[in-house]
Length: 429
Image 1: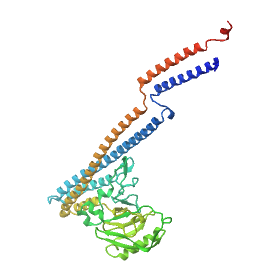
Image 2: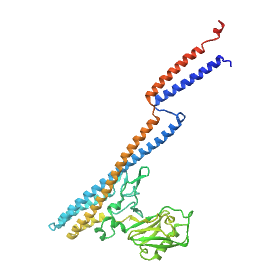
Image 3: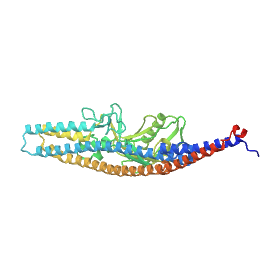
Image 4: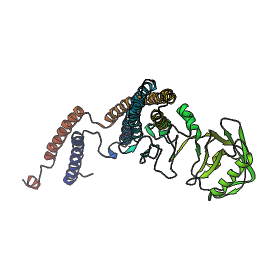
């Protein structure tokens, strides 16, 4: 095959271009500090970097969540610590006032200080973090109490249930509840007898079970043959209730359930009722705890979990046990009732026990958060190390390769100059 000058020149230019591209790639690595700048440079490496970057971003989000949760719980712990201080001071004043040596005027003076402590408790109940009320469950835009010290939560028919726990992702499949729901701290006051029992026992007076959202128009319930669900009241045996009919709307289903509860008789009748809120079945009791499980009709078919237990419910306008203890103490002081003042001491001690138990729970969560945050930081550091090994260039090696490619390129230029040196004039000599 005849080799022409044109062929030689073309080959030389192609080789020069290839050498220059390799040198440019090395220069790009040196400028960016990365092994690759486009997917075609290293498809597997790019894929691995994308995955590692996603993991790093997730870890950083988990850390932010953990930090925010810790700040929320720090605010909660501070509020509860202030409540504990108030209870201690109230207890000191009650012990002082219980002495028969105090005059009516002295007891009224103490009542004035107790009133201020009571009002401060209301303010603590409305504590907020970054504009969110920390004791109002999911309703973080609503204060827990109104100015009179009664549960508010937005007024009207608004309700607050004990399961309104705000859970935050702090890891893959790892969630933590960051808030404490108001009634867990302040209790429920339904009558004078509630003053002398533990806070948790007052919460049994109003109970609720809320189902999941359902669309009965597209998923009707066929119970024409008569189907049962079972309800346990006050921890007793499960009683079946028979629901009969075909239901494509919640109103008919609710009416059928209430009718079945009435037919079942004691202890369900008069103690448990069903209602509908936002296409969800809601079962309520104003007397004691209860739970619901499947009978011949699966609990899931009406939006409930299996063996779903009731939780405490607070209605707007309800009174707080803790505030009521202070109100009764103020009344006894103003009425000069020594026996009533003496009773307040044990009542305040019960409230302090509840507060201290809650502080312990928050402490446990804080310790868990601290361990989780440390783990997140370690995982982030490890992932960033893997990411660096995967995509960061070895600068010593890159500089050496640049010098080598420069030498190759200069050599190719020198050789090429000699290859294309002959011209027509050289052949005419």
